[in-house]
Amino acid sequence: MVEKVIQLKCSCNQYPWGKRGSDSLSARLCAKTPRTDFKIDENTPYAEMWMGTYPELPSYVLATGENLQDMLDKHSKELVGEAVINKFNHTKIPYLPKVLSIAKALPLQLHPDKSLASKLHARDPSNFTDPNHKPEIAVALGDFEAFVGFKPLSDIKRLMQLPPLQVFLPDVQKPDFDDQTLEHVVKSILTASDEVIKKTNDALMALPREDFGKDAYTPDMIPRLSNQYDKCDNGTVLAIVTMNYLQLKVGEAIYIPADGIHAYLSGDIIECMARSNNVLNTEFCPRAERDSVDLFCSVLTFTPHDKDSAILKSESFERSKYGKTKLYAPPISEFSMLATDLADGERETVEALGGPSIIIVTKGKGTMVADGRQHNLIQGYVYFIAPGVQIEFEAEKGLQMFTAFVE
Ligand SMILES: [Zn+2]
Image: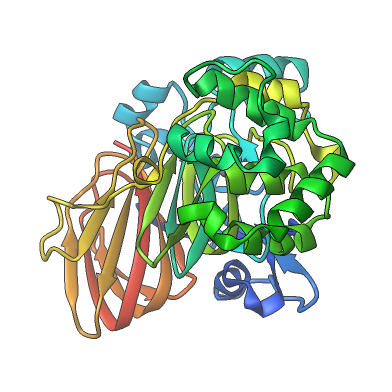
């Protein structure tokens, strides 16, 4: 009989935009794993803790040190389940949850859809390490800032009338400012010279705040973003003029569809995505890491096109006995996410899920009874749970947990 609840040992990568040392929640969570060899170095940025079986940064079975994927391959029926194996035609976990600790803007990016991803993977497998798409969600663990999707066309049209921005408009203007006009604007901002970008930034900062209407934050954002990368980063103008700027509170979430433009700016988040690591970067990163503007623009979609449609609302979860568990269900087949919050002494029971799940404790302390055994829940602990296992939670001290799953 194989154990159906498996505690995992996970690790962090060290992208330069991560928070440093023990300021990084992802590093602090990793360091809580019992008997781990992971030690926080205060001078190192820790960006993303990965949970799951993506080969670049896989999770291990804590008790034995075995790679989790090897264990899933050996016991695929019990641990992954026939329903999920048949749905995806493999014995891998179809999603990849992460904890991100963001000190400065991530590259302005999009994740290609399946057909482009498989082409890019065939052409350049070292940069595009799988043929899959990567729609993603992000749930805020505290204050979280992000640029997501495009503003409504009417807002962009209004901002583009500001004298410093008119240079990016098409020579011949159509009566309607439509997505084609927006595409022209995006391209001309992304291909503008350092000199033009610097001049534009200076001219925008010199304008009175009132000129920006409800986008009055714009001039303050310029020095902030310019200091993070450089004064001539085309991403600064693109993000503040054309993209939605969102400030989320704990528990609020966003959904990024395949090919959707986004750049996360600051905060700690739980992220979950389809099993992929494909990304096209442009701006907010060193020039050498920027993928070509033509490729970037050719796959760009114009969804979401306003703040509200970027938001992923949580719903109540029917299989939660005491109503302490919320469901985030993006419109994709690879995963959904549960968030369970318990005050001191509170209980929750979550009925069996139809596929494999991964649970991480982000706050507090308590226990869970699952598959006939009791397990400790302590901040930073991560468990893999097989399909068909009901879980009874009990909080000793305020518990906050997130469960990624597929059915
Ligand atoms: Zn992304």
